[in-house]
Length: 109
Image 1 (cartoon, rainbow, N blue to C red):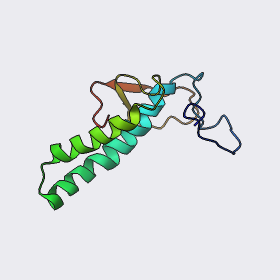
Image 2: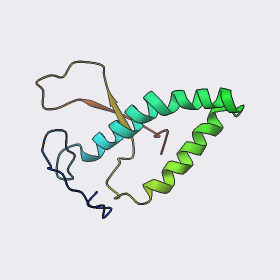
Image 3: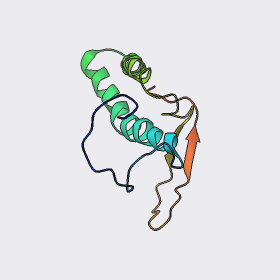
Image 4: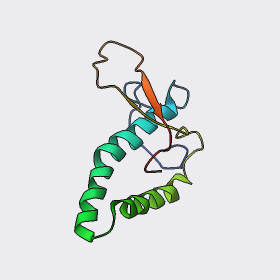
């Protein structure tokens, strides 16, 4: 919000807050956008939209990708890494580090 000049008025806490100086800053953005939003929500929606609209799922996917790219131009250059990231479905309770897994070619950016 600071980088984009968006005013904010809330208490910033270290828990679940992404700050540029923290490790995995861009990896965590990728995890939230590419994996949580993209793979869990957008990919299934592309399939449903495809069935409803009669367009191929790949066309719907490209529409979302193109729209996202317009917005990404306004983000700081270090916001996302080149790859996209997820992690194994394990319990990481009590561990400070989470072993993120890199994948090439982000689908929705």
